[in-house]
Length: 270
Image 1 (tube, helix red, strand yellow):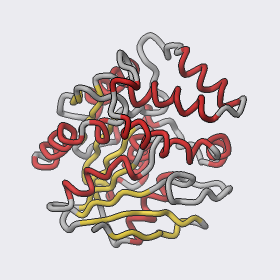
Image 2 (tube, rainbow, N blue to C red):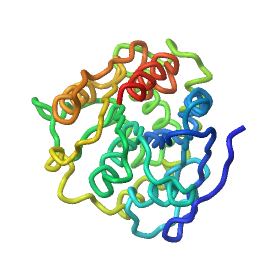
Image 3 (cartoon, rainbow, N blue to C red):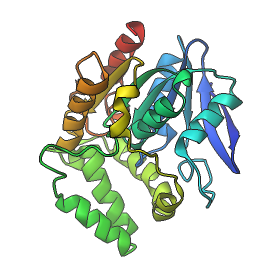
Image 4 (cartoon, rainbow, N blue to C red):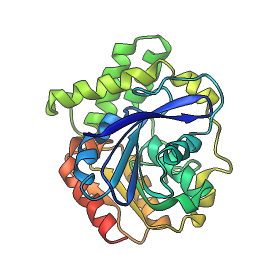
C-alpha cells in the first residue's frame, strides 16, 4: 500500500502518495486532474522505483492557500521531505510545464524528463493558437458559474478529445475525470493570480535542458498539443515523440499499459 502524507512548502501542506524503492519518479498531474491520474503508475513502477505522486495546491487533497507561490518549489519541497536528492520528472500538461521549470531552476535535481501533452510557455503553434468553440463555451460557462456545464465540456475536450465523444469512453473514467476536475475549478482564477510566472519564458531556455527527455501525446489530443510534442522532441530530445493510440490528454489514465510500456523503455534506456 502506498504511504501518504503532507509535505510542508512555504505555508502550504502538499499531499503526496509514495510507494516502492529504487530510482525516484516524480509524477506531476495535469491541470484538469490530481494525483489519482497516476494510480496505475504507482502500482506498476513501485516494483522497480520509488514512485511519488502529489496534489498541487488547490487540487485533490492539498488545500488551497491564497498566497504567492512558485509551482516548482512545491515539487522540491516534496522531494526534500522524502529525502529525494534527484528524480525523473514525469509531467502531464501543466504538470509538464512544472517539470520544465524544475529542470531549468534545479537541473541537478532532475535525472530525466517525460513530458505528456505539454507546452513550453512562449511557444506558439506554426499557424497560431486555433479557436475552439468548446474551449470558448467552457470559459463562458465558467464565468457564468455554470460548473456542471464546464465539467462536461472539459471532459469532452481533454478526456474524449478530437474525433471521439464521451459515450465512446468507459463511464468510470468520465466520472473520475469530473470528480478530479471539480476540485480545482473553485480556485482556478485565484491560483492564476498567485502563481509566480517563470521568467524568461521556458521556450527561450530550451537549449539549457540537457538531461534525457521523452515527449508523449495522445492520438486524440488537440492538434496543437500534438504539434507541441513534435516540437519539443526536436528541440530537447534525441528520441521521436511517442503517440499513445486511443487516448487524448491523459494517456497514463486512459491507456496505462501503453503508457507504462513507453515510460519503461525510456527509463531502461536513459
